[in-house]
Length: 145
Image 1 (cartoon, one colour):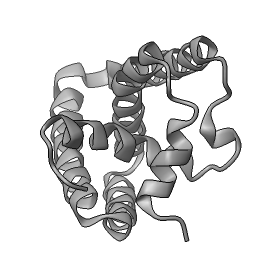
Image 2 (cartoon, one colour):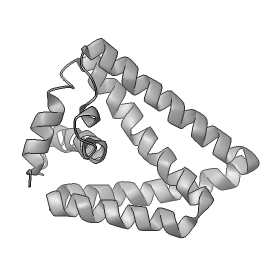
Image 3 (cartoon, one colour):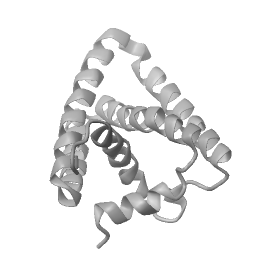
Image 4 (cartoon, one colour):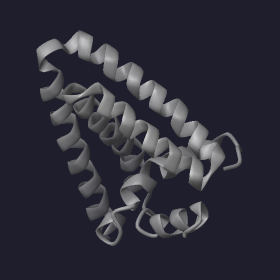
């Protein structure tokens, strides 16, 4: 079982370029949000289930990262709930558009970087991306993870 630092080290190998990092800091949370939002639209209980499972995964890797992701998940639920109310019938279309644009951004970032995305080697990196973004916030505020 890889430690969080080992995951981040491997993930970081394909995220050295500053522009690619900035793209990921925006696109990874957007992708996460839109996935939850689209599942929520389909079945809210399923979205909550996904959030519980991912939070447990992050808590298993690191309590501080898991707690940060729990807080992020609360924000995601709040944004999903209120954006659904505001957007009405356009909600799913807007979430799908944001999802596609964020993935395009990710691939542009990797084109700039000159390396393939990490998840091509291991699908678990799809879950490491949000924690990696959060770890940069922790680093900025000198918090341990």
